[in-house]
Image (cartoon, rainbow, N blue to C red; front, side, top):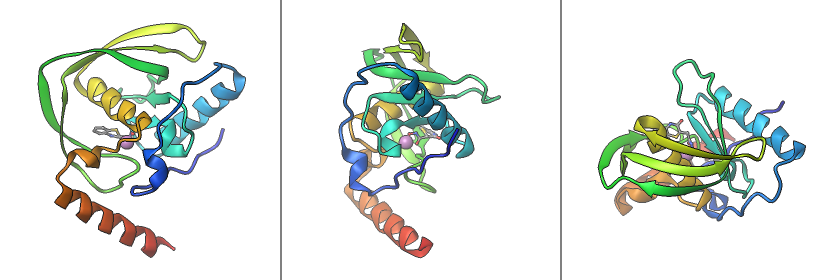
Length: 168
Ligand code: GNR
Ligand code: NI
């Protein structure tokens, strides 16, 4: 098991588009375990491979209170989205300390492979639905701050660059 470094906005690598996973094998399962460990260690409810600089369609999620219900989505695709929208505050492990409102579909249906390479169909609502949309955006190279006004995006960029300079 290993903790993986998480890319921080505005790192340009967060905007790369992920490619489909070619094979669900032991090498991928090791990566999945490392991503889960990294997500739990960072107290996140989700982590997309893009955030650890792996540009493949792979996401791990756990929105359970007890943090004992890992969900692994390989090559996920949203097959249905509710017309109903809800606006809620979001955060991101790649944009630490920033929380702001984003409008999302209240419910989604997703098809994906699980860690055994089996097809799973998931119907999600509430926090899980929001998290799935947030993670699938990462796979498209999109970070949630891109839904905010250009003014806010500029301020967040400046803040992040300053924080990263202060870290060194
Ligand atoms: O930990 C996370 N919390 C969160 C809260 C509201 C909406 C989305 C999220 S996802 C985020 C983890 C993360 O950055 N995943 O990419
Ligand atoms: Ni995120």
